[in-house]
Image (cartoon, each protein chain N blue to C red):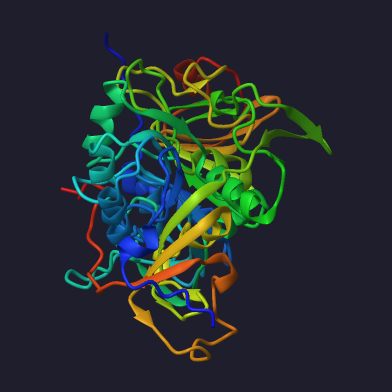
Length: 217
Length: 233
């Protein structure tokens, strides 16, 4: 099959930078494990953002220099981090109260699938025999004021990860506000998808063809 | 005189019954009370239900306890890790029951047990398979699932400093589940690296007041090890 593509996908770093661009000064943000972690490297200079980690940290800083790792100070992915001046530690019930109680401004999560109306599937592919693990995914999805997803738009097989209805086990219903992908930024609304932006040269009609769903302007 | 300082781990863990529900603090390897887990293995209680965020890393600590075959059930949020091979093997062999709980529900169900709450409506997991067939309710337009407390017979936690009344402070993110587990169990045993005279801990900064603690044991400080994640290439 030949198809001329005149557009370029956002790289992982470009995507992280695109997400970071929308994180406002003063925001309290939880960055999920994996790709979302990259967003921290792209926050524009001068924008003060407080990072929350589910295991009881506010004001989480970057990885320590080699040799200075302290494994009592780790992120949700169990990797060593640092604490910024002003940071605080607290127990797990308080940490998740911060999510559920609507105190976090933004959380950025990875996803297997997102529905046009914002249902999220990101914890299990439902494969028989796989050992299930959910961690804080469900708590984060329903708790933050805004839940954003960061992912490639298409699977390796070219299938859209934005779908009419998730086929993978759900993490949360109608919880995703925005999808930041390598090809476009989309908003999930009760009425369906709305286009925020797309990479240069990718028209809305082509995006609709890739996703297989209507996208409002 | 109140003196919660136990002379040894064996003394602090004496009398744990077969079939007990044991709450074990820690997230990844931070805050895992490894000395108490080794003590529990030596103590020998079996048919245990273990509550921990994870299900063991590597071959030591919680993984070693699982390997003894004395654990019937694990209640946790994230069993699958890069080095959770002991759990994986037992689970796949059908030798271990798993109750998978969203992490915040785990924490809040423990807190509820400690706070005397009969059950609570929580939005997490609504509409997902982890809500099971529990009761749901729409309150002010938002949907919730009824969640029940998790009560422990024993909690094993790791703290940094304590005194003979059982007051505790923790170290960095090793605090994690310690305070809520301490509340949720009939008997709470904490390891500390330092025991100080009564009155030396700053009362404004005590994290777990001694009322939630039964025994404290001093253990040598060992640097917390890495575990549970894959190093980026």
